[in-house]
Image (cartoon, rainbow, N blue to C red; front, side, top):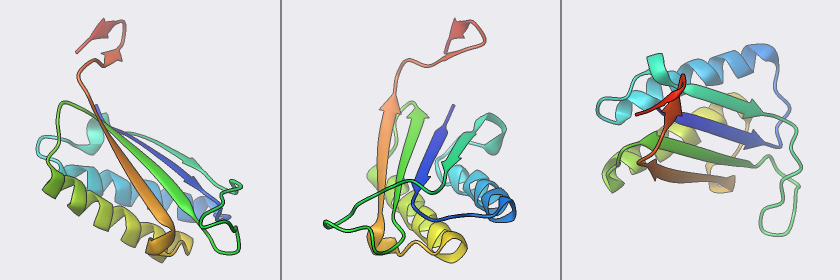
Amino acid sequence: MPFINVKTSAELTEEKIEKIKNELGQTITLFPGKTEAWLMVNIEQGCKLYFKGNDNKNTAFVDVAVLGSTSKSDCEKVTGSVCEILERLAGVPSDRTYVKFEDCDKWGYNGFMF
């Protein structure tokens, strides 16, 4: 039950959004037992994001929520992949990208709790 929420100041074409979504689908498999089959992705472009007091370069904030627990080493792998994807496809420098992780023990779906 993972969810990846991307907010970026970059302006993206539909083609770029689709590529980012597809590559995030592969990235989620860096967490043991997680697959794109249960992944939900949100990509918000054109956000007004300030980092280090300015908005003169593309910036991104990425939330990654996962049912269960994750290890620091797996989160580092995911962070590296997310930063590389956004730098290559959205023009967001990796030093202007934050990735936040949330391990969730309660997750609802289709009227019930996992």
